[in-house]
Each structure stands twice: as C-alpha cells, then as structure tokens.
Length: 195
Image 1 (tube, helix red, strand yellow):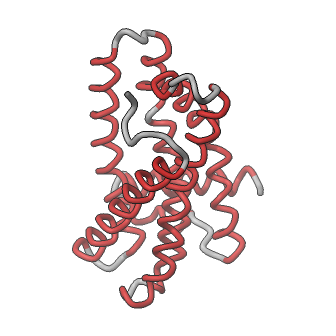
Image 2 (cartoon, one colour):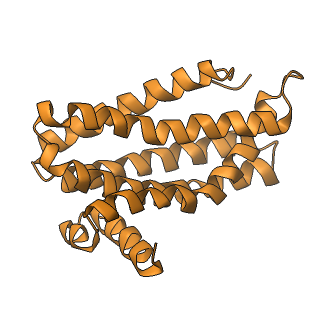
C-alpha cells in the first residue's frame, strides 16, 4: 500500500462527499485498488479506539473486563463496516448495480475512514468531560446527521445511476448497517444502548 494511493483514496472520497464527481477519477477501481481500500480500516483504528474507550465505561457491569468490552466493541464496529458490503455483493447484480459495486466499495471504504475521524470531537468530549453527557450527545447527533448527508452524496455519485438509485442504495446500506450493528451487539453480549 503506497502513501500516494491512500492520499488519493481519501481525497477522492472527500471530493465525492462534497458533490464533486471527479473524485471517482482519483480512486483506484482495479482489483488491487478494491482490496487495498480495506486498508482504510487501519486508518480508522485510532479514532475507533478512542470511541470505544469513551463508551466502554457505559457497558461496564462487573461481568466483563474493560479489555473484553473494547474487544466486543471492535467486533461490532468492524463487523458493521464489512458485513453490509458482503450483503451488497450478493444483491448488486439483481439490483442492477453490479457494474458500480467496486466504485461504491472503494469510495465507501475511504469515505468511512474520513467519517470515523469526523466523529472524534464527541468522543473527546466524553473522555475529557464525562459529566457533559448532553453536550456529547448533541455533538454526536449533529455529526451523525452531517455524516449521513456526506455518505448520501458519496453513494449517489459512486453508484452513478441517478439520485433515486443512489438513494435506494444509501437506504439499503443504512438499514443493513443498523441490522448488523444490533445483531452483533446482541451476539457479543452488549445491549443496543448503554445502561
């Protein structure tokens, strides 16, 4: 994995998120580029770890160690990143978007790394000011809404079949991510919302 490929992937995803279709030209949609785009998970690990650390105490119930909670949160987040892509691979052909599957996955992977970093401020507030729950919740909500707008743009442009098809893929992937999130939380013994 070359630094230049990472830079181009991040920049391409950013340009798609800001409504610039030329971001697709920066993405490597070859077979190597497809697999290399999953390196975005490694780039996302620092803010993910920060987020897991900020919420781990919320899940503490005396039965799980902090490390065990962090491991379970990692399974949930990484699974919620990867499993919807697997689902999309199975439905892409019947949905008529097989020719844009690689474009979407490459853009989505790099875009997801960016979005995880976007959520850092709310995690920092939770760690630095644990009593400022309302501020952290409000900040998380605002950043979540902003991230969904950016993901919608990235999805519509990378799918390249118009706003209606792009919106359908966005909605389907959003639903798949939520279902995966809740299923994995239940599977690993974490409640869907901290106590």
